[in-house]
Length: 70
Image (cartoon, rainbow, N blue to C red; front, side, top):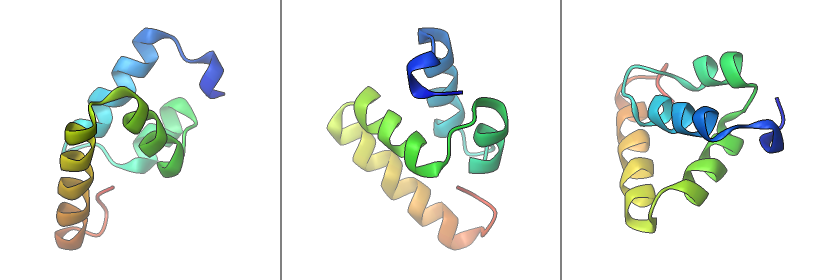
């Protein structure tokens, strides 16, 4: 699925999945066809700058503790 094909509902669902601590990159890619870089770009465009930085920091910290996470 291309980025331009995403509805507002799809974008909202992707953001919700990305913010979840229980959903990995592969789950998002299987459901929406977006890789990690595309999800990060979508999150950067959707979230406020401070929220995006906090999300990225949390994802990096969590991935250091659990290899299968984002």
